[in-house]
Image (cartoon, rainbow, N blue to C red; front, side, top):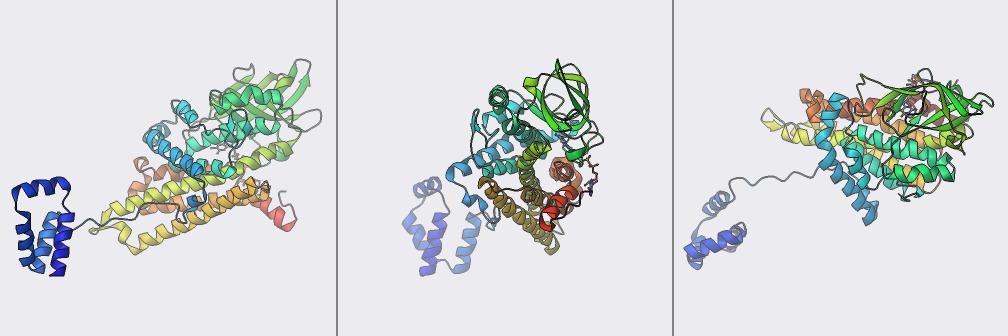
Length: 449
Ligand SMILES: Cc1cc2nc3c(=O)[nH]c(=O)nc-3n(C[C@H](O)[C@H](O)[C@H](O)COP(=O)(O)OP(=O)(O)OC[C@H]3O[C@@H](n4cnc5c(N)ncnc54)[C@H](O)[C@@H]3O)c2cc1C
């Protein structure tokens, strides 16, 4: 009797107020209750099933790439910003990235929208920048890359490499001139270090020259791969002073005579990022546009240390986006009459992906803590860059694998992550170069040459 009453109660609970109101106008509820008490268990179960529309739907667990709930370590304010960026990326960016990626074009309309988030130059003090933690900067890089690694790269060049060069190496006047407008993304920057014949060996081997003359500094040579260069308002050019042999930094303004940019076409990764081949032909820059505190490659390296940590976070975002996409897909895709997520071999792939992703996330969290405590060393950033970009390659390829043929179709997103991971793997120091930085630190022997 008790169980019958309980079932009747459950039954009424499954009816909403409106239905109950309608029901009470049509039937004598006490009488109905009395009838319920006369039904046997089977009849009651049948009735409940009927009212509930057959078998109740099984709720699947939420899709969450942050398996160890690292977000719980954030303050309420930081968590709110993380979710704001995620929402923006889902709403404004996800719907258009494949369109632009396929066409090898940049969605300029996103710049003012990104600016409104007020996340550019997040860690810098003053100049309109928020002076927030490196951890938050990393989380934002992850959130952007979780939806699209190209947009994260564009943003990283602007906020990290270009603004970072001015912030770390510029004079007060240079900072005042550029940083507030760049923070608001009214002016866009680029960072020119790599050359057609000099990539990994940039520290000692730059061939772009800077010669001081009465008219200013005359720059000659070529830079390759320079992100945002086709449209940037200012490009930081790193060049070797022919007089003292030291690397110096120059702020080359858009439209300066002798500064030509050709877009690099035919990339199979980060196709939204506009990379340029820059040719400098007697390009003359005022002394006031030489970065006043960049005296040697050591200063360039300070900028790279800052941004390399960000690239590790970006790799985490790319991997997380691929994992979450793949998990969602495997729960929806049916083969042999069952969701493929219910097969053991598919679960093995998913768990391997999640293990790597979780290890990467905990690593970059600690990396940022070191950075915030002013304890970050080159080898810390290099280790994270190597580990995260390597593991990202594994994750995106497993994500593609569990999606079968659809894994190589752009519309399912994972194909884009798969391709983009290749560029993240190579830029800001290859695996070999970053491993050599860590190797030198732990053995005491430099093995670069
Ligand atoms: C999409 C994209 C965007 C980029 N954006 C920018 C940008 O905005 N600004 C910029 O300045 N640069 C940019 N780069 C350049 C990037 O930083 C370089 O590609 C990278 O540093 C590697 O240089 P490289 O391509 O010339 O390769 P190389 O230096 O020619 O290396 C080729 C191979 O040799 C290996 N190797 C080299 N030296 C050693 C050694 N001593 N021991 C063992 N192995 C070694 C490398 O690890 C690599 O596997 C970008 C690159 C890409 C792909």
